[in-house]
Image: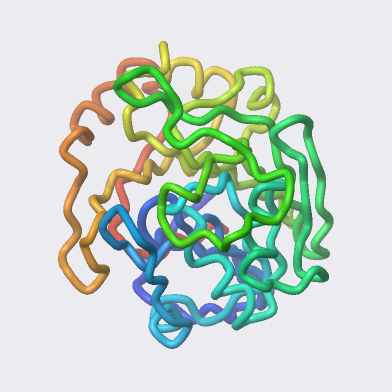
Amino acid sequence: MSLKTTLFADMENEDRIRFHWIGVAGFSISYKGKVILIDPYFSREKFGDIHPVSWEYMKKYIPKADYIVMSHSHGDHMVDTPTIARSTGAKVIGTETTANICRAFKVPENQLIVTNGHDKRTKTDCGEFTVHTLPCLHGLYGDGKVPLPGFYKSVPDPTPSNHYHFVEGGTVASLIEFDNGRKILHTGSANFIDKELIGTNPDVFLLAIPRWENTPDFFERAMRCAKPKLVIPHHYDNFWGHSLEEPMLIQPYVDLDEFKNEMERVAPDVKYRIVSLFEEVEIS
């Protein structure tokens, strides 16, 4: 595997897999003219009432969307998903809770693919690539609990208008397998189920790292089970009320030097890379 980095490269290249980090747990992946978004979040508001930004604003950063893959339904992962889906026609792959929130925001039913992946593995064939959703766990906060737990078994009424209304709804990891044999694994929170990662062997592991210290032996287990070639950490930028127009800030509870130390300690043969926002990485 070779890697090449460019900035804001053309997303319509037909032959290569290219992706860039779009902040928080979000990524944009392009392949054969298709664009897959994972956990896209552009509004980056202070915690409280939601005021999603417009598609006109978001398309400065993403050219289009064909599929949106959701790890879970917290606001910093899915507040903007209904707007993107309605504006682009993208299909949303996610849990029942994700689908019901989308329904509350009038996303058409034919754009929703309910995976149930937090209970069992689910496979979605998208032509040039296949999305496997794997049962996963959400990371624990300082109180040892998952923030904003809960599910929507039906369409929420009234429509969610506050970050407190965006409950977790179950968490999945996603393994995207391309028809050229390459694989990208994504987790949206710093936790996982060991047996679900075994055998994934991704070319790139997009690994959420905030509050990893609350997950025992986090890096050692993740590397042993997934056996990735390259690890790219994410979800460490400070996004609460901090616009993408401003220089990136790192969350005060994330130490990237400690991330490097942990990776070198537990998996010295696994490559890792710290990427900048919108820095594009190519897999060939």
